[in-house]
Image (cartoon, rainbow, N blue to C red; front, side, top):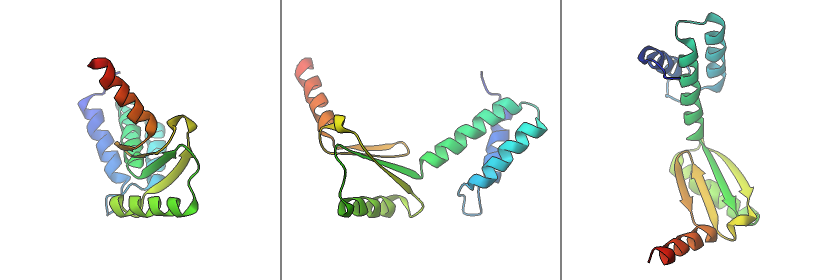
Length: 134
């Protein structure tokens, strides 16, 4: 379903209303606005609601860091990762640590659309691509 220009504008207006004076998203306001959209059903509300939820999801992902390692990280390393990520992206970033043995070694960090991949699996895949293309 293609979203109309009017619905996009409405969604951006709703998104601005869901943010505080520092332009940070307030999740409680976002939920309240989404509920109100569903109840009032303004013209083009389905497209506006879809775009609004997309904007909220993107904003939330920019403030969430996911650190994936091949084995569990010790407490000191976890604290160091948290400090480094918060120094770079701000103190409002939430952190999630996960373990994926398929990575073989190293760490993968994702904050929003930014990804830093220092895993052995990725290095081996890149080496394999280089060998097969040559």
